[in-house]
Image 1 (cartoon, rainbow, N blue to C red):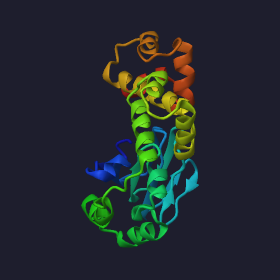
Image 2 (cartoon, rainbow, N blue to C red):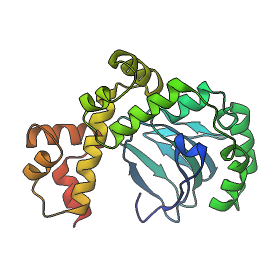
Image 3 (cartoon, rainbow, N blue to C red):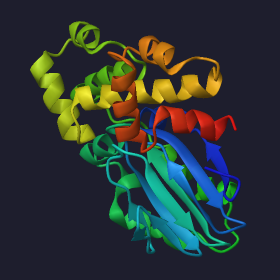
Length: 245
């Protein structure tokens, strides 16, 4: 996000944390735009007031379901815009839908949207969600194994190692990940390797791009540039200059 947008985050705990990475609330004191880095996941956005566009698409009440994020997306907002949402983990939404969790039912999402008003804040948003966030986890063997495999990818475990350490066969896992994430395991691994590079640029601005490519397992600097630009919509050199100017 940027200085034109005030963002608050809440990380849920308990069973629902297997599926949701964050609940968030944003308000814009000024008009502006920002970029949402991709994470191979999707989410739901509730627009409370103002005007909001996501990659040129005007968002409308009662809620907007974000598609799988494989590239960074531009958010444009007017002064006074207030919006909030739920960010799922990769495959989190599909898994909740598979076990028929009440939180992701259209009727529930509409009810939550109707409960938000002009004076809403992060605490009141969490209160609206609390009943659904505290629902017990429904056991599902295949989902749990797929989640474990995806967790390894997110934590940058090499794909071959992640496959070898799973009780499911490689083809089964590939199919499960594609069905629930909407992208292949290899594509998800690409996204998180770029995210690693992005974080290293933030943490260590003195690191050269050649060193960064080596550190993050890219073939060379050109490979880093291509992947970074494809996924984050900016070159690593421009990103480095932008955040350390």
